[in-house]
Image (cartoon, rainbow, N blue to C red):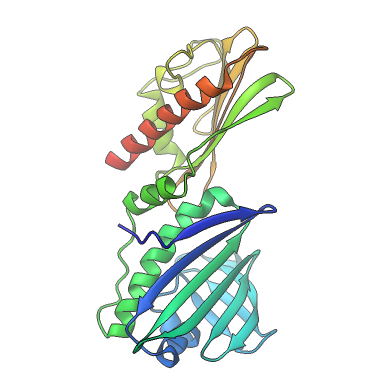
Length: 284
């Protein structure tokens, strides 16, 4: 579905997404598509204004987002025609490198950002944009085909973004998962509750449990954002649905347990549970 040349690496709290595309057009033509606001507006995810020089100001206006919320700013960091165009976009940095490749070009995008778990959202979004850019250069239609989730989930798998971690917490040994989902919190909550209305003190609905993790009494509930329950006298499971990137909610799931809690086993059980949830959301 997507090239294996797309990679995601994390170092010192920053993550770099690198995507390569071969384009059947010379660097000068690709440069124009990357830097001319009239062409950018046909494939880039926002409308752009740019002062095309190092230090030049940029603005990014998101379609359909009203007022100041839909406007972000950036600064050109590199503008070396027709080889390198790079700029900041809020706290992110985008670097576009163009090199001759036979009669065409090799385009390398490096997107550097802080939210590693948004990597699949960014990759699937850029995949669609770069496919549209290629179509624009070829003179074909430029209507964007929005990813309905399949591409996102393929990148989650490729970049191994569904893996949890073991951690020591004030409440004892635990595990933590952070997983971007492809549906909004309300849809995820409906899938997890299956028509039940959770309440404090009542058993947690089955959707919030995993094999070997019984649904004990709910200790906190705030639909459609938070549900926590006591699965063991010394252990809590907590589901939290936060604002995410791209498609939907960001799931943060934690489980704590008593001394000797088998975190390796918990990592396996919850990974399987979360991936089954993701597959159900994709099917829906």
